[in-house]
Length: 131
Length: 347
Image (cartoon, helix red, strand yellow):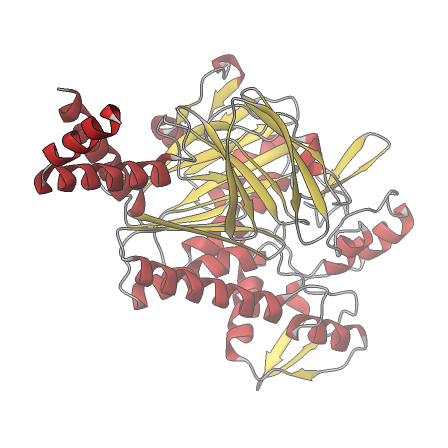
């Protein structure tokens, strides 16, 4: 009982202005989490399906992701700092033959399945690649 | 103190967010390749509107000029193969065909958009290139000796006729460049000042990316990285012909879609040829078209071909990974780390 009484007292100490500050910070924290959630430090991976970003992943993990393209399922393997196409429904498998990429600005495109992956990094890179 | 650093941190992340929003980035798959459009410094609505207009224009051209799915071009090809004349009620296509005729002559027939039959024979008139054999030598020789050329095409009073039934128009080495020039018109019409248009490696720079010029990477033909980077000033276009995007493998040998019209076989000693064209109304078209003769001509003729076509900025990667670069381009290029300077020859 004494504890509850104490808590109620401390509640009274928090004035309107304090509430304002607390609410402001809650809003800022939510906003920061929302905007920074998918941006791990350093390099990260962007997966595009046709013209939309499907997902953003940290490269610092070991994980395989399945993605539905227009032809079928593409499998993308992330392995602690590097990434590759590991399965693809396309006939020529150019995307798989590209192998691993691990540097910012590197990109692999699977044209038949319309999936592309690129590594985004903090280093200033080029704006397009002339392939 | 902790509070202050938190506020500073949040402000910085907000500002970073704003910086990124200056670029509107969109992608689509057209012309059998990836299209990438970046618009700088426009409102989201404006950037989206102009990007969509450009994508729509590319879809229109794709349908109009498609070399093997039903299009005006395939209609023309059917008529030619039957030795019939065909009316063309499309001034744009007439202008394109006339320009292609002119460019074929200018490149001493190394850019030849009338060899659709050869391209088809090698299996490149499909989306998959799964052909596992090389074509019969006799058929190739017969086609080459029949001398298909845009010159055989006569257009009078909007009626087209060719006296060579082996002529099949394939604007694969022209359409993407032409599309860049069309994109340029759309950007100008919409009063968009800064954008970068990338059609599967044919790139046009428009304006700048903020304080600096647009920066473009030149692909290493055998690795998924850039060989080098170059600043592309406003109005300049860059085009690459490479053996690594469309090719078939037969008995461990690579046969690319870049077929020498004079032999009927793919050029095999070159991995890629990249050229930069200065601002002009047709810089996009020229960057696409002129990379072909530079790729196809023999090693000893490449420099002469560049001179003939007035290409001052070029970079060629040969099959032994050696690199030829023009003096002008060498002054402005930034090699990526790990490139052995010994393999580079300045022409």
